[in-house]
Every structure is written in C-alpha cells, then in structure tokens.
Length: 250
Image (cartoon, rainbow, N blue to C red; front, side, top):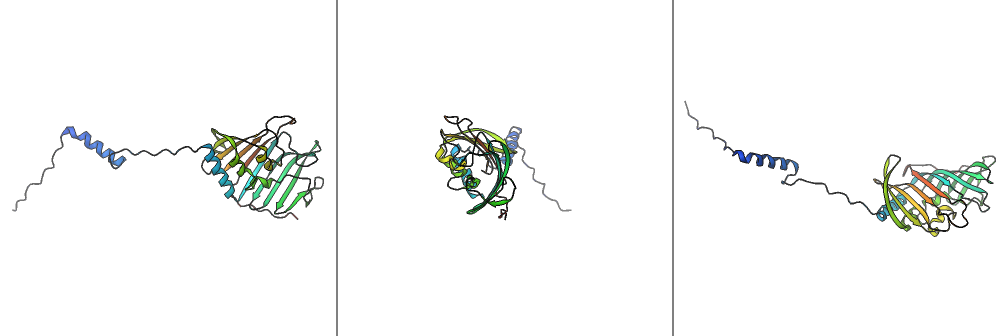
C-alpha cells in the first residue's frame, strides 16, 4: 500500500496575538484599511445662501398655489373702499393668474371677488351678480406680482437686509429654515400694491430644507405715524411645479 506524506500542520498563533488578529478583522470589515470611516458632516448654509437658493428655486418654478391672509388695513383701490382680507389661487408662468379675493366693501359687507389675468387681459366677477366681466381699473392689486422675476418675492429675498437665521421649524410636515430680514418700502412696495410704506418691513421666510422651496412668507409693517392698523401679510405657498390650467372665464 502506498504511503502518503503527512499533512502539514498549520502553525499556532501565540495566544497573545489572537486579540490583535480579531481586532484587525473587525477594522477591515468596518473600514477596509484599518481606519474607522466617518461621514463628513454637511456644513450648515448661511442665511444669505438659504435665501439665494430659495430665490433661484422660485424663479425656476413653473406654477404654484398660494393662500394669503391679511391682518390690519390693506386697501386695493384708489378710493380705499375695498379692504383686502384674504386671497387664494394659482400662478402659472409666464403670465397667468387665477385668484379669489375675500374683501370688505365700504367697511361693511364681506364679499368675494374672483380675478383671472392672462397676459394683458383681466376679468373679475361683479360684486352684486357674480357675473364675469372685464376687470375694473380701480381694482389695483395683481397677485401675479408675487411671482415676478423683477419685483416679486424672489427678488425680495435677494435684496433683504439685516438678515439673520432663526431656529428651524416644521411647516406642513416639512422641515424648514426660518430666516428673518428687513426690507425697505421701495422693494416691498410692488409686492403689496404699495400698501406697506414707512419704516422697513419685517420679513420672515420659511424655506424647505430639502428642496429650497419657499413655503411661507410673512410681511409685517412696523407701527408708525399715520398707520392706525399696520398690516401683516402671511403668504403660504404649495403645489410647487404642479400643472394648473387657467383659461379665460368668458
């Protein structure tokens, strides 16, 4: 019968080296080269960077839904007979706006006015009959300016002064950056139909941390001489980029 050579015997590691071997295997499994890998923390953007990104995002957004609540006195006609209380609607680039206003007429009855603007043409509903007709020239507020690339909310964010970042907040189940700033009436005027005047207006903005979308803007007029009831506008934006259809009503 043939005889085979004896099988080689694996060398025994000294007991004192076993912990080192186990540790090296653990490190290889965790990092590959013996060093424990650590994720590099993402730097927190500055308030100015947050506003710049939000402004750019708004410029790129093709459509958005808005809800506006107004506290204090804001009149949207030259004779100061129509006081704006609230508004809601949709904005679609480049020049389409559909809005439903809630207003107080002649400091008495609360009424609803619908407005559609497409390009240079506008239609509103009659206060008494509700029928659609050409917009009256005395109704001066066009909410489409909120979306304007030159005088809207986006440029306001780029021209704000005294900017500071406050504590993050949750808005509609979204984590947001909260930024506060001051804006002069020459900047805020077009956005508010020049109803906010005087001292710099305090602006608070809530911006989605993930997308950079503006979710809420609050414009607060500072108390001042000749302002019996300073106005505060709270604008909520949603449906960023969703398709909307705005057509002539007649």
